Length: 334
Image 1: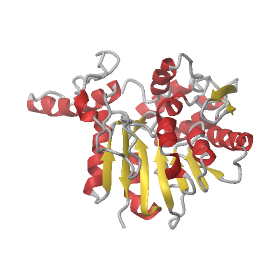
Image 2: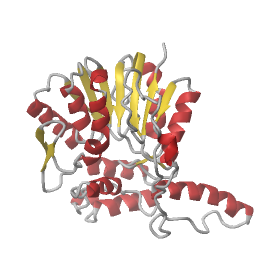
Image 3: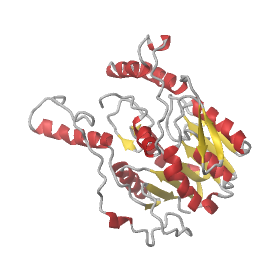
Image 4: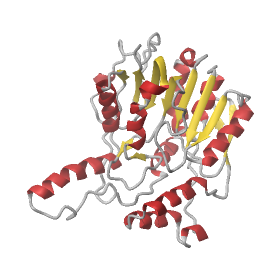
């Protein structure tokens, strides 16, 4: 990767769709960053392989406030959310995830719900508004958890929504969930770009730590008949999660993603490039693909007919006739 700290790029894509710009991540120089910009300090620590410094700077990135709070008027919640510094506005969730939840509102009513990576908290808050009995929301950013708490109070659901802070010491899916805690529904709009070679996990790139641990813990943390609702809107990771879950014995339904992000193209290209360099007896680091320098594209021309929703309800009893691109549901049998 050109730099391991690309916090804003996926968010900016969807913010642009809504003609609204996200706040910038905390990049300011501070004494804690040695007087350099935070993203530059993180890149340098990653390059030298200083894992402890990388983790310290990640924690700093998650907790360092910028200079502004913002208001976000949510049409689904019916309130104006107050988002604390470093918390991105939830345009992506409002555009893609909440319409799915709306169309399946009765499915969420009366259920216990866990959301992994709550961000602004809008998904958890909306599930609660629709009648979820209990919602546990996790995130690595303390400002996100605090935003969730404040907006739960605004919405009047503070008694049913609990935020839990994940630390950089363990960013796996169930790091702050008790070993015997189970939920009827697990919902997540996680990083959906997979790059096993990435130096760090970010809000847009998963090294596999989150997605794979999510699947490994489903059997323990879903109630019998429980369902995971996931939004992976990049084709490779989406299909990989589908196949892994089926291989593990789960029932999986999927409305395929339409595209692959440039970052995933970069990872896949470089994986195969390794074989080419070895075959041609070239140094393994002779050159690499870079999504920016090489202008790697989004693939947005996948054949449409596979998305015909006939008989392809993602949840039993909810034949809406709609296509929810990027969504998959994983059901625990028994």
